[in-house]
Image 1: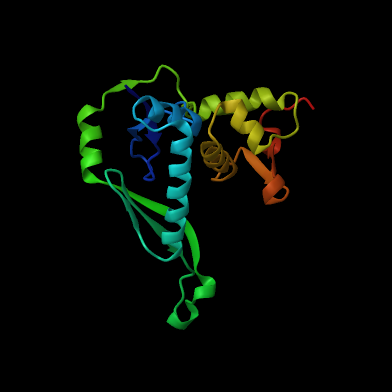
Image 2 (image 1 turned 90 degrees about the vertical axis):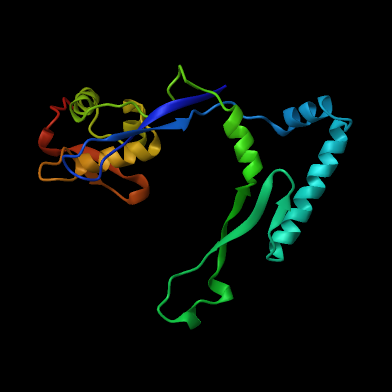
Length: 206
């Protein structure tokens, strides 16, 4: 059974309603130790045999990718390198020294996807793993309580105060700092910024 959660996609168009979509909920992963045990149970290979095969497979995968080749693993899919470089007006400026590997692509085989799609069953998770869906008014209420005993708030404190993910905390705190009537003012360097209430908006007692 695959557990899912529902996430909000904030609308980029003012006045247009937000949209919602499903994602697979975060769940406990399978460690390599557990994977070896499962393979051992369902095949004639021992756990040490699995370790040797996987290590050899990884070694050959790296070697082939470094040769600029894609690697197909039967029944699973194909691995290939993803690279990036600066965008230049002059093509001569795009050279080997400026190219970097930025990831490894994996394209699963169609048969694998079809089989998973056929047997996949979903249920909504009982535990939410993403940000709370607080309104602007509710966030201001939480901040008002915080500023009763604090002169400022950090992004990390704001994240924990509201129960947001890091990305949501950054997005929401930026909204509070901008607009015609900002509620917060950012001070300090980017890596150590603090946020203070604008014009004692929250009635700090400090």
